[in-house]
Image (cartoon, rainbow, N blue to C red; front, top):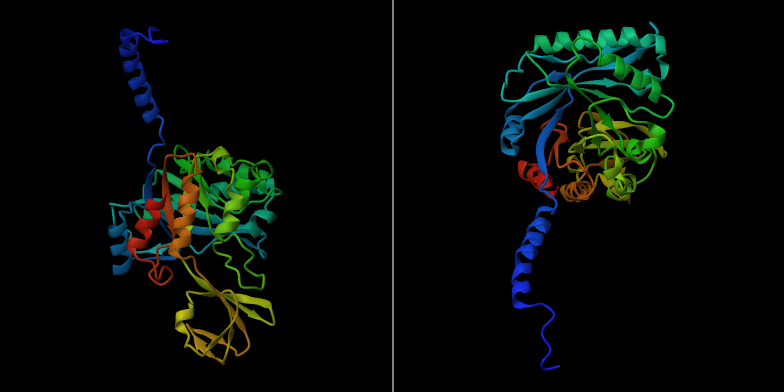
Amino acid sequence: MTGRKPYFSQRARIAIIPGFLLFLALAGCTQPKKKEIAPAFYFWKTNFRTGAYEQQLIRATGVRTLYLRLFDVSWDERRQQAIPLGILQSDSIRDTTLQYIPVIYLTQSCLTRLKEEDLPGLAARIDTLAGQLCSRYGIAPAELQLDCDWTRSSANLYFSLLQQLKQRPFFKDRLLSCTIRLHQVKYVSASGLPPVDKGLLMVYNMGNLTRYGGHNSILDPEETRQYLKRLALYPLPLDVALPTYHWAVLFEQEQFKGILYNLSKEQFGRDELKPVKGNLYRIGKTGIKGGYRLKAGQEIRFEQPCTEDLEDMAAYIGSRIRDSSFRLAFFHLDSTAMQPFQAKDLNDIVQAF
């Protein structure tokens, strides 16, 4: 044994070293690339106007893109046709440092009433109105977006509308995107794949809003995970949207009564609410809060995502989304709706990806 030569000669060992170093270099190259996240905001009010809060938030987060709602497409029962509602009004779209992505929201109730023969005329009217509004406000968009929560039964009609829009003069030669709900990712075979250039994954409004209880219908991290386990397999390139808004849901005798926008628990005195379950409370006395008249005995559920849950969701989505570069849009840019989020919170969420 003492006289046996080693298996590799000295010369062979020296020859192996460069190959080993090359292997290490290649292994390093296969490490996951750092994701490039471009923050953005949705603006979802009829009157476009940004105050000091919104402008400061845009600067502090480095946002360069606004998704700007142009109008809704709803169904008019009297005329028995789709009509535009909530058309954007503004005298202040002057920030040329921002890129604007116009969004048209097609209500689900409208989609279920449309017929195939309605689509050519509807596509023409959407195209004309979108072009007129963009011209009026000096917007030259590279991308246009349709927002609609289609279902399995309405998918073919909606996809046909998207295809017809892509042939219209204003939409043609522009990037076309559409919003994607969580169920459309989980059940992609049943939901179908929209004929667009890219999707925007909406990670909010996943629970049953009208169901009585102490849950949070805006964002439930555990439920979100169940929907996005196979996110990496979704065929379309995706941007992502996360919620930064809040509201309250009102119940009477355990029956849904409505949404109270921008009403928070902090607007109530310590003795005006009695805990029931989770974030559900019973109102102690009749009065007016946030412009809403509330009655003693009614119950109110306060819903708002917290920064920690949004960071958790960002990390989870970041580990599964196959896109290495995408926009992260916060919904939506409004000083009242976004409280108590600050620029640091939003920057931390971006970094969590």
